Length: 383
Image (cartoon, rainbow, N blue to C red; front, side, top):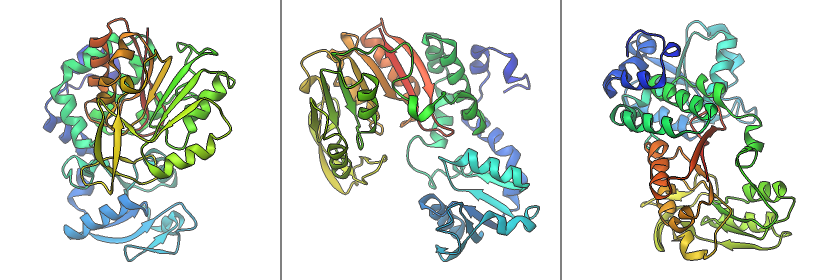
């Protein structure tokens, strides 16, 4: 990148000035070089699975972990990976000396702000390590992967920008690109949608709802989104098709939605065709198709199940959204309203809208973001 301010150039110029993946990585790491070059002892903020991965990584490379930090009072004064879990206030007298690694993605921004307000000087967010050691965090979207994708597919990002329908969508994309260039999580606070958790999928004024709607909930989890739909239409709808392959989540959804009528519960995942896959069943939001998964699931396509035009399809299916859209081609041709998660794979951000546009050029696209992290970017497509 040149030294010209990112705020003073337009999106096209910004994209064209993006350098190689190595140049982007060097720029991302630069503010932390002094800390990283002298790293001998650390505290890890986050006593969960990601914190454990960092503990193992630091142990392998000879960096001593002095302890864990966590905001959960139930964890404090317990042990994790053989280290004591501390309250951050226990370390205030060392705030100028110690190095803290934030081992959290979902709450990285909030933790970073907390440490900044408390005056801690040496704080490194975990994604900084991912750009030079992708083995710590192998899941998609990978931080190493989104940098490589941006450097390799600049024109794809520009194409997406040019088909977005409103200024809000363009601001969202611009800041998502800024994140890929800097790993600065504060960008998300600038684009998070109002009433983020409550409003996701149903608050946008370009969406249309009626009393005779057919709603498809792809990746229904415990029924939370279906409940929002029912509330949105005042319990007046024609039918809901609920897809969820995870056994525990499926049973929770049936319980949570048992008082509502005209819901077809389908314990299958969505895909481009009927098949059987290995599946990592966790009973949580992260359950996903995985060749090393702990169980098997059936998948099917929307076109195989539904012979009528749906009114609204939502998909949050952990990285198989594009395949599932290929299995809903008949629906796309008819212009069904879509809300598609756009963050599970490195290329989702441009590949999914590109495919939808190829199938039906009449679609209009809107982009919204709903968290202070890399998760919950949603593409809306309407005709």
